[in-house]
Image 1 (tube, rainbow over the protein chains, first blue to last red):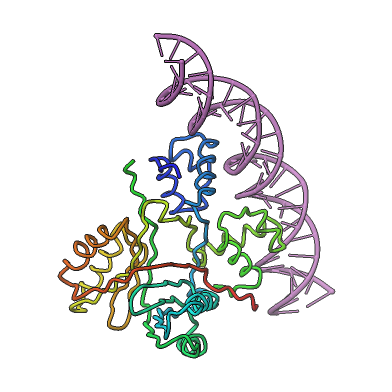
Image 2 (image 1 turned 90 degrees about the vertical axis):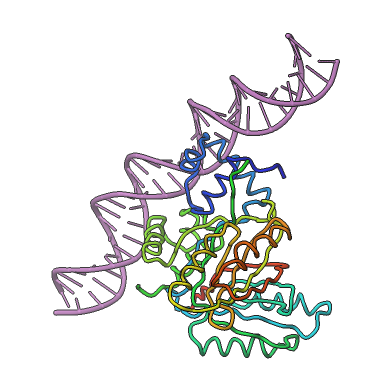
Length: 155
Length: 155
DNA sequence: GTTCCTGGACGAATTTCATTCGATGGATGC
DNA sequence: GCATCCATCGAATGAAATTCGTCCAGGAAC
């Protein structure tokens, strides 16, 4: 709730680059004693500014060499259907990200698959066959880059 | 390069959920001595299966309450242009993710903005004004969920 | 201007953890 | 049966996380 000062932002940027940075090294980097630095990190966690720490895995090395974006257009936007299909999409093992959108496309789902056959079955069984789904549009992902959120250290 | 066994997969899943899990706790979870567990994690890192560890930040709490997906269609797909515009898109501070796609849309860019005015200026200054860009299509992101890659512990 | 109060920050002490290394055991191949 | 290899273990050591009492700076009230 307190506005983030320069030190907070430096901490956030550092942990965004390397979440396993030791508290000691982080403290040195931001110019604080380890204890003070730890207190800040904990505050950022409890305030929900840091939502979690995740290892980034290489999908290809796990036999998932094919990625796709599947745009989903629903038949009706009435009540339950929206939430249900959203939960369904998020629950698929192949799903790595779900966007709920405004516009003609209601959902955009980023999926990882072993191969084209896997993708074909997935689209049919988990997308097209759902009654809420009006139509889908699948695009192959050639490359995907994820970056951190901007942390401009203005303050 | 060695195929991942059940323990590897358990490690990956655990670190995907919480990258700051201590090695000791991780070892206990997978039923290995801390030293053995550490050796495995290091192997997974050097083999590139674990690509990094990132803190997940709440964009809204940093004053970036508006998210959008911007589909980009290029004029020509010739040589340099493709790489250049890709680098440009990735270099924008507002950019959180870039998909390079096959299909009518060449790039899909996930951006975070302070407000609609910020988004308006961004689309004009960093997208529409680019000579390689033929047209863009901006969709508001109502919600966004990121999940881990599937780690089925079959083996 | 003085006093009180609060919020960080510090640093020593303690506990817990990471990391190294030699030894052990089981599997494989000969 | 024997040698080899690889992963695991567990103790030892070194380092780090975490706690806690203290201190200082800034602000508010008077």
